[in-house]
Length: 342
Image 1 (cartoon, helix red, strand yellow):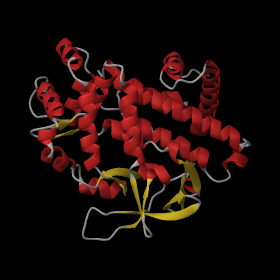
Image 2: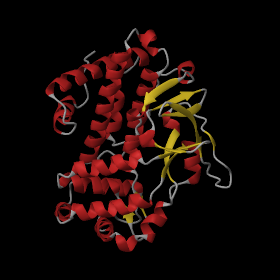
Image 3: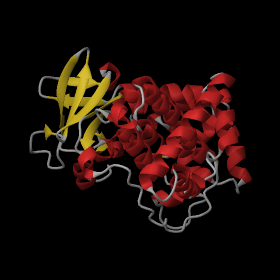
């Protein structure tokens, strides 16, 4: 087998230019990924890690990539996995660090490419965790949670105003202002709320998460708190999470995005301008796929010209207005799906 890393040269460039790490880090991360790849091939018995990722990168399917990432991180975090694989805790930490950087690179890469292949994705079952392992206790530090990608792809669209976060990311990239937007995303992640019986905990204050016997625990300042989820039926009190892994957790907008955007529309003139510009290129009814595709499209020179006219400082001010009204919570994915997008 050729242990070839998908988009290896692009990843190396990203480590230096975007992650701002050293050339020595490049060598280390490539080595970590190669080792993980061999491990995945041994577990799957059919294909390596990059075979599965390649399918979904080509289709721009971030949800599928996130699930693969979460599954590998989960496997490397199972209690006792160091002994099972005959690897030190430090080696496992290095593997997870390398995969975490690669995952963030793939999200950036998909943000910048034009998604051409919109055909249905062939389902290739990626399953490296057996039922016994999936029920085992595991811990992971919060930097390995994939919530950042969800914030970066949660477009919303309403009649009078869009929340086109993918296109907004493109604006900041074209203006070479990605650090400003990254800081905004980091602040939004840090403000995520975790419900517990005792109190609400901010994501910033969590050192790690633990999943044991289907329950989620947040570890904060040395104390362990059982995490609760709201239900789609808002008249029912929150209950403890019943999950197997982080794929079962969603980010929920406790305050309706519809209300936030529409109630503050007069304070969001640039986003309204962006909305009106995007509508010019969307034929028929707006859909998530149409908005995603136009956000990535390089076909329209007029869009690039439009982007160049945007004042990113003022746009960031409007994003701060939105975030000041937003409350994000961890929520059971099934309940969040029942609730629907708002």
